[in-house]
Image (cartoon, rainbow, N blue to C red; front, side, top):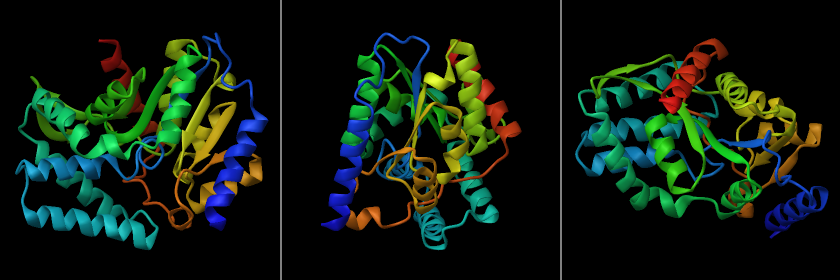
Length: 281
């Protein structure tokens, strides 16, 4: 009860602070949303993996290994480089040799099966407020860009930036283009997108649950901590950032699963640039 009351108070506090936000008709403003545990409960890649397992893309032992890696992230609260590399390689090996169009089609089905019911209504409402104000809304995520684009389209958002898997003649090679879009790399992606779109970042908003996204949140004039992990909650309070928590009191006390991989801004900037190029094509 105390946790729920605290979350409700936080929501009311934000509403009272910003009755005029987002500003209608401001075409130099936009909103950037992290995906996992911000827009959607849990990790999009995990839900996608469930759908691929159901369709026999990989075997039970692969699912067990992936589950162990997720458990490690949750219990240890750290991003172990060896586990992250193994998880990344496993995911790429699963899609290697499959057509991009095939995975995109399956992604639509998996969204209906596992993801649609896990969208946070509160975060969805925040995104809709920006859209209603005439602003563009983007997902910015370490999840594969194909998954992110499906989710963005289904939610009626403008588009998505995500991690890019290499494909040749429409077939996945099992390699990444650059590195996962994560941490400081997200900030580089947002900066590049803002430049391409002619946006004023001081008038933009960004939303995330993870302290890994502090670089992205720090770029904009309106940062939000949504369902924040412990480190982000503290950082947000120290800087007087807006905070909203749509979880129950019990769940809000838990630290969320850390993001899948940590990389530098330079490598992530490469992935962001390619994602931008693909968006323009």
